[in-house]
Length: 283
Length: 312
Image (tube, rainbow over all chains, first blue to last red; front, side, top):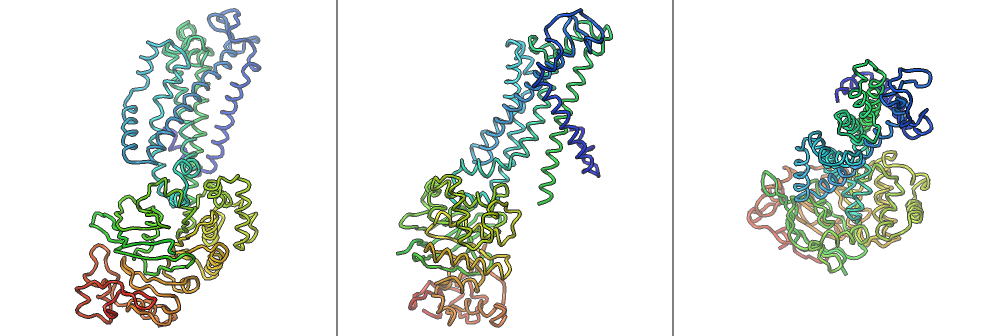
């Protein structure tokens, strides 16, 4: 959110286009890397070479403590990081959409109940909960994804609820009701299309924060050791002598990747948000 | 046979200032196939009647009385039962057409929607029917226009689209709530033409709600004058324009630009605490002492009904 004042300055249009492109290019770069990881990586990330090698002709980013090629690890790591981010965001957005819609459309006692539950979930401290869960459950990235998704729907639900409350009072919804359409039909045909802007923004922001959380958890050693995510790479670099030996390429590369990837997603979502505001202002 | 039968309908809204009586004991018989115009000044409760028939009043409304549609009491129906009647049996055209259409769907789709939902028609077939209906309503380039969106249309075009969407499932009764509000004369003529087509081809009964006597004169068979939540006079169209019975009707017609332009003295009464007795008495030129005490009832004289002590 710190980036917002920067975006809101005058001369928005020029900034918007360049930022949009920046986000789009970077994000598609990371997505393509993840999809074609098998073809792009020079080696299997588990293949062993000479350990602690500095960057050289054969290993552009050197090798780690057990001799894995760091560039290959980095390329394969994008898969894990993006998967956790997108998976978490899908679960959270879907849950938030359903709960917010039902709550906002039907109002009354249903609304009170669902929003009460949302408030309870909002109070749960996320990272500590995951640390506790990770300590008791087997560290697996599927579990991280599921748990993050199951507690991060709250803000989406609230935003969707308030938007639904607003839309359900608009004339075209009354008009649909008087044409004799059922509630389920009105929700799908009249309400959900108007939530798209809110949902896409929320989805991306959730993706970005889930990626950061996954990296932090992995860095703390609570991640899945069998999956080479970017956070896990930094964790290994710090634990196994990368930091002490000043092998900066070992930990800086995944750090930069996390930052750039999250930044690209956030800037994309901001440009979506601004598009929405432009539409509202235009009307 | 009457298709819509409203019996002693009372609608009030609970507001922070007190109970607002929007409709105060309205009874109406709408005969099959006729067009009944409900005329009155802004805020007299015309639209509230339309909305009570459709069951789409806001949550703070309190309803009393009965509304029968073909022997079924609409006020006792559940939302699910009403959904079957809405659109298929009774259609409504709202004022502010540009807001009543969904901005994210194409015109054709919105006209076809009732067919897809009520008659379970295939989407392609329904879209074809929508285009045919637009052609029947003399819409230029119907095919091309059906693929456009409401924001690309003017208010008048949207109003015609809305009429098309309301009649596509062939309802027996169409409620038109100020269909010409905010439209210029040329567009008004198109709306009149369109409603006439609906009347002629489908035999639809129309409840026309308006404050425009021109429109009422062109379309309706009978005319009902409303004032402060009450009906003051119901007359066949020809009789009404040759001689108005109620003093309010007379004053209202005289206030029109082409009939004298004489304003009615005083202001419309507050709906929160309306005057005692006859609600029109503070502004009435024929006011007698009894008018301030007793509220007159609707009296039948010939084929007409009127609520005034002059006729009792």
